[in-house]
Image 1 (tube, helix red, strand yellow):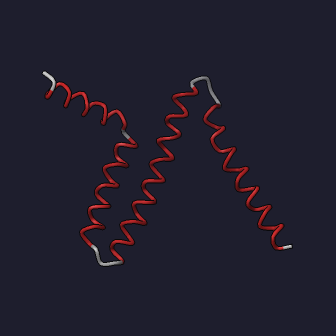
Image 2 (spheres, rainbow, N blue to C red):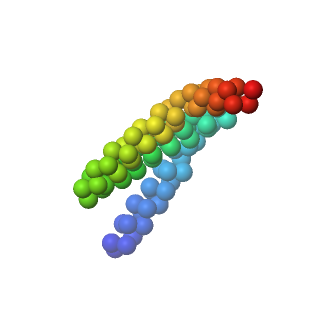
Length: 99
């Protein structure tokens, strides 16, 4: 009986996971909502992975690696939340170097 209980939990989890993105398509601007949803999910995935990686580095007493990981994760998360900043930096670099 134990295997059936685990199978039900797995099926319920997969069903909920499959239904979560459907809220993206609730209005007429599908692509904009989907892009915003992907960036929001990427932000949280990067943040959690970065915290875990920096924590493991600090536990191993690799303090420099932990700090560098924390800074890099912070920069990537900033650009996930503000993608227009990345495009403005690219435009400024193109104007500077391609004149």
